[in-house]
Image (cartoon, rainbow, N blue to C red):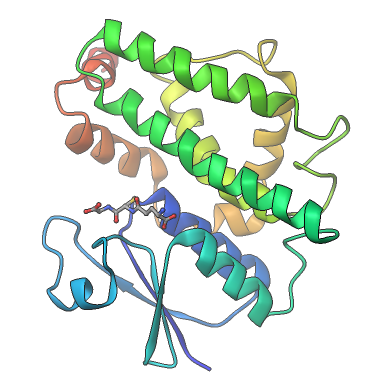
Length: 225
Ligand SMILES: N[C@@H](CCC(=O)N[C@@H](CS)C(=O)NCC(=O)O)C(=O)O
């Protein structure tokens, strides 16, 4: 079987699939796309024109990171989804929620001024406060010691929050102790570290400079220099 991942370098959803591929030990190739210059063939296989896409055996194409991660898990007979049908469904709910949190994070970068930034931040913190209550008491990962689909779903957000917090504080360890501990454990995972190509601080700067050009975060970042 051949697997080709079609992705943008800075895409958090593509990063989820890279983590799953690495963790599950599957062999794959990668096709890097420039988001500013998408090839026309992409629209034939991706109705939304989004990445990640997974080409299987050079024929079938799957889209949506959560679907791709589940397919990879099934293919490798992995155990990224744990427990009975209801427990697995609950993990899928959290994966979906991870996407919502990621979109809220994108809103922070895009905020044109401090007022809008604080408004979006309040929304994100509300989501994270709900999430805090769902995290395993002992950790270190979401549901204990084993990496799961929920860890993979949130890993890209945790990485981006870590970099954003160097520029603008969002929350402290005391505000969200379980998420803080969980995110540290997730970012220490080998598959998470290997999912980043090159220096992520440079990638993050590039994203802020394009997605959030002249916005609040961009200005704060430039003031830092
Ligand atoms: N729900 C999708 C979201 C994917 C997504 O938002 N991808 C972004 C890049 S991070 C994209 O392709 N954006 C390009 C566009 O919308 O034109 C998933 O989980 O795969």
